[in-house]
Image (cartoon, rainbow, N blue to C red; front, side):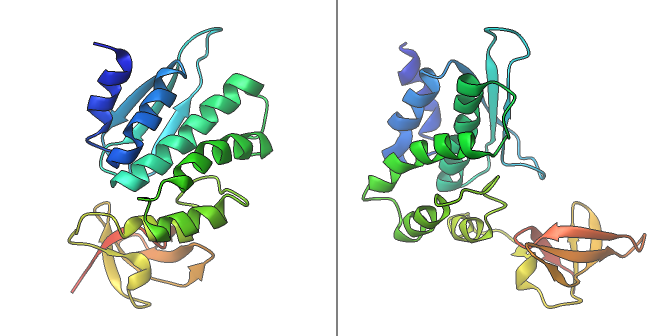
Length: 205
């Protein structure tokens, strides 16, 4: 079976149908090992450059993302690949070279009429100065989360200050906001941790 068709059959389970061919063609022509992996709490996607000359680099994307988050994360990591292939490893990971590649990959999807207006508007604003990740861009993260399936959780920013909540099998008390993260105290140890405002948590009664 043609490699592009194979990727299309896989990606249609994860992407909005309008973008399956676009992303599949990008992957096939990029000479990269592309893997859909189990959810990771610390990252949505990852790019690992090959350590060997003319070797194959690898991109991994979490398989539990909603279709639009999967799309944006995949393009983000492909921009890393393109930057590496064009400039090598000796540039800032999210510097001007990466920003240029990322914007060039995003621009075609902004012309697709079926792209939700809120995502289009937020992306249009964000490409003026792309962040290091969609998680770093809290406005984009907030819009993308609207397309998640309903879960028995809340985002941390939805809780009142001093609310008790659990995440990653630990219990915390919510503290003050520090830019995009809240300073929270772990109840057992008394240690303080910065937790992202859009982290999914379970409120304790």
